[in-house]
Image (cartoon, rainbow, N blue to C red):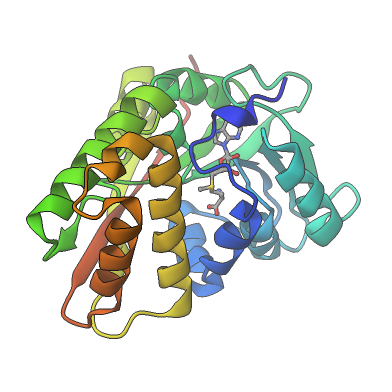
Length: 272
Ligand SMILES: C[S@@+](CC[C@H](N)C(=O)[O-])C[C@H]1O[C@@H](n2cnc3c(N)ncnc32)[C@H](O)[C@@H]1O
């Protein structure tokens, strides 16, 4: 059953947003840390439009295969059309909140930037993933912490609205701005072994901003304005004034924005 309508960032340009913000070199470094190597059978849980899946696929050659699952039919269709290769890069519509029956077992499971959209159900998702991981296999969770909250120096009214908007999407849309800090406890609680963590900069924006970051942040702002529209009207001059000021802030080379990414991996015990 697909329940993608619950996804906070759902919008007509989501495939574009997800694809342009992927830097293959960054994904490869993350994949190496996670232990991707030739021959593995990998699950890319919450694969989006499949670009990351295709990068991971290259890392497991020769001999590896990968299945990408996502609850968005549109993104899975795009992934199949652009990156699918019979039996070695496969894509399937699936909601990770449901058990992953009939997909077989995997050597390594990768879930990047997915749990943050499932605040309440993250422990269930981790349990579902664990059920399809081979004993001795690794579960790799990569998520942001303090997501969208680190901008300096925002005018006080803008900062107030931003923090309130994050609270609204947390409560109403199951979004978790603090997903990263929780990853270790998910693996610890289920009894994973050899748990390892790393902390990297997902975003570090200072000086001149690039097109991808401008597009990404303006898109995030637009979504927030739709999900919490009344809040933005309380800004002096209303919603349009907020966006015009936010764009000015983004374009100002003095501003500083950062988002930490937590990488957490652990081994499923060989015996239960
Ligand atoms: C921010 S994107 C990340 C895509 C990709 N993993 C990457 O690293 O670029 C989050 C993806 O997770 C998917 N997603 C979120 N919750 C999901 C769930 N419960 N089941 C399946 N897919 C989910 C969304 O549809 C979206 O495509």
